[in-house]
Image (cartoon, rainbow over all chains, first blue to last red):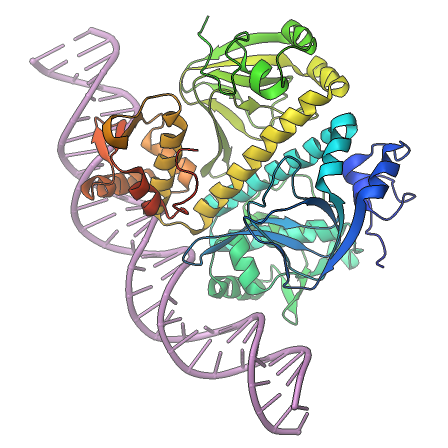
Length: 249
Length: 249
DNA sequence: GCTGTGCTTTGACGCAGATCAATATTGAAA
DNA sequence: TTTCAATATTGATCTGCGTCAAAGCACAGC
């Protein structure tokens, strides 16, 4: 068993499945939770394992408990584009769909909390909260996807890298205390190739731009995977983002 | 007043607002419809007009009745990326959000059916159908966004153009009868610049690739805006899409 | 008719990032 | 320890698309 992820919104007192906290319940004291409890089960995957292949039948929906999963699309000739990056408490799968529209892969060791789809859908039909919470989460994902589209369509390689690092830094800032003087540091959960697939670049370009950002003092590297961001605002500026946009949420 | 859009799923017998058919009701005979009726109103925009600016307060949600609207994001230095293209029956705005996250612009003359947001949200809280239908639509949009991400990140200019034409051809195939022998023809609703913003290209590249596709016989042009696709499968092949993927839905 | 004003096409040229290739680094297995 | 495979870096070269610039075209107003 795994310790529950760090939760926001004051739901720490609840049990260990994030969907109880973030995807479904608003106040953690409704009796639908008991029904959910009965149809849930856990699943673990090792880094690199595929959770579902594009086109496969998918008879469950799930919530990421620990680790990172990615959604990728692949063209016939092998060109790959990552289209989703799922962190703890994110939702996978969709009520009302038979098959998965893209590959879901465990990027790191991964634990998910699954709900059998049919009973979940039945529960959803009788419980307005669930569809509403799911709608809210899906709209957030849609916003993220559209931000990502701006990145893919219009940003330079350097801006793309900085944007990705800013996203990861922001997400991790909730979990780790900042180092002294506002410097943020975190472990990269992605290989250079995965970063390239995220950003619509080649791994060589990713590597070159990382070196360039290091040389320019925008980031520091400790080993290959640990990143230190001495000045987050500078990173945002390099990323080409609206710099005022809500520092660290 | 405007004639209602062509509707699918056998809902032609209902009144003229598409949200009654596609966004909200499953069977067109519930009494929530009367409540919706009370909070709805229509709005028209001319081609080129902005419906809402990014960051503006948005106190309504809406459904496109006729015409085309686009969602775009803009960077400080003016680089623009279209992130959504809304056709009749598509939904704009989101329950639970105060401000618009991107510009919404009328690409052609546009009519939308609006619902005041507060009462709509109240209705949603008491009516499971609505959130469920909205969730379904949002998931469809998310899928489209992810397909679009593959296009932006990994496709060549030629493939991008062919993909866009295929999307437009598919959408219009519902409305217009095919010409003889499976040839599809439709009017481009976008300028070259708007196509460029959609595809993450410059308008010059769009123009060049259109010429190239014409020279190669993949498409024919009648004037600047009318497109004839003699062989839809060929177009899909040029687009780099899985060619088996459900011809014309 | 003429004259503008958008929109579109086409050409010439340069550069950001892809491609091809070699080498370095790391960590796990033997 | 050595060896091997996976991952990452760096260099040299190529090319697709962007940039800058100049026409071409079509339609509205006069």
